[in-house]
Length: 211
Image (cartoon, rainbow, N blue to C red; front, side, top):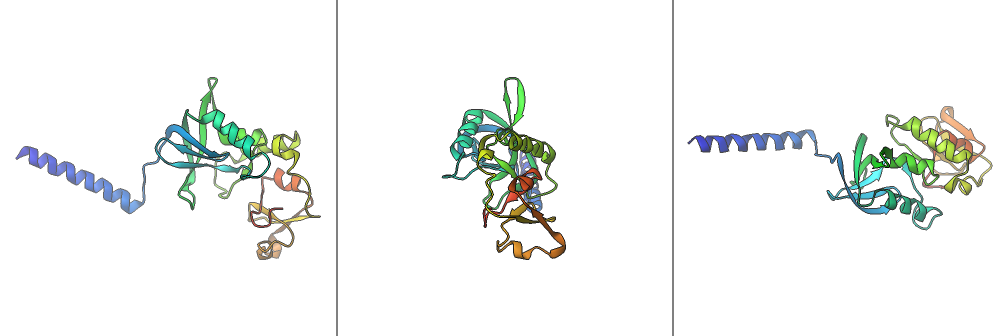
């Protein structure tokens, strides 16, 4: 009888925990895991099966300059190693990937791979949520890479327009004739007369018009 009561009590506890997680939308997120696959410069896969999108940055796409160098750097740095994950306000993107800052122990030091990619000129800042942590550190790393023309900044600053447009409510900049630029309210318009000025402020290029 006592065993049956204990079993019943355990079942009730497990059911309650499951329902609480279901109702509140909570999920068990890995805090650390081994990296088993590197998809590209900003996407890795963990031993847990989860894919992780490195938060706050964007690396070149396949076929673009420095795509291979960014991917190779991440592969050499974290593949087969255990990493620690730090999450932001949103933990998943539209593709179901985890969004995280990825930290790894190397040479006795704890390093953020996201920031290292910026510092080496293998990525540019890509912040969507203004509440994200590490924004200032990332901006400093990118500015240094720009000023020293490291990596992709040797090529990325070639001007394609006489000026560029952004909104003071947005994190991206556009070509003047971009269809998305037309939706910017007049009182929010900002003009940049070089790509460098926009990047130094931490803006990202529009993925539609690709300035």
